Length: 117
Length: 153
Image 1 (tube, rainbow over the protein chains, first blue to last red):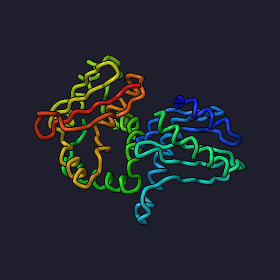
Image 2: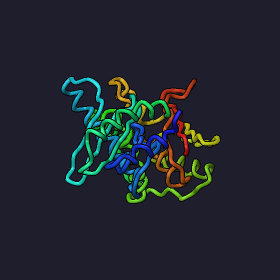
Image 3: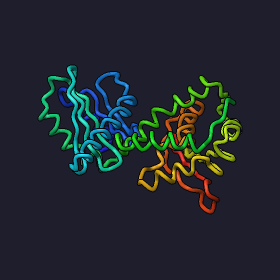
Image 4: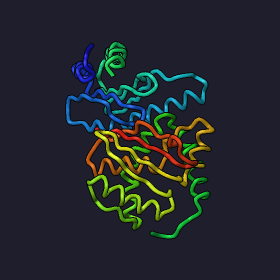
């Protein structure tokens, strides 16, 4: 079985992905990989609440459980993917990243991350 | 210690805030409290409540016990450290009714003031990355007796 950190390192090796953070729903950063010097602790806390808010929107609209949420900013993209009920994977990618490719990598990695946690 | 207010009023305010917070952020409400923890410590200092900067667990336990009992938050709080698990035993928690009322709505006890304070102290005074592993009524304890366990990484 692959180690969690190795899976996150593989993700940030994908062109356009700058940060990959595995974070508990309580905002606790379980592990992270980054191409730069990003504050992954801060990212973890923010994405956890971001995911929570997105989840609440779905709940109010009767859309059942959340699978993935994405935020597009002028300077980049944040993609959050649920890892079971207790954790999530957050990806920070460049604005010009291949979104389809990033989503594919995330979908491939999510089960491996869950198994490694 | 400053002017004291009725615990029922404080609990009512927190009830509303926590309920709304949980409605908006769901399970991630714990992440908000995690962010709030260091600011609660800073707030205590800002508003004149003195907590000494000690790193010894027994001294920390004694200091926190003095502050929270003087504030009327509980009858006592005691910290114990076993390997990487920090346990806080709280007796007769003043916020028990708040926690119970939220629990009736299936809202977990993410807003426990003692949990937030313990997280902040573990981070600031013990220099560790803390994570709550359990918060539950003390086995065999009386109403309001609570045991909090925090893993220190």
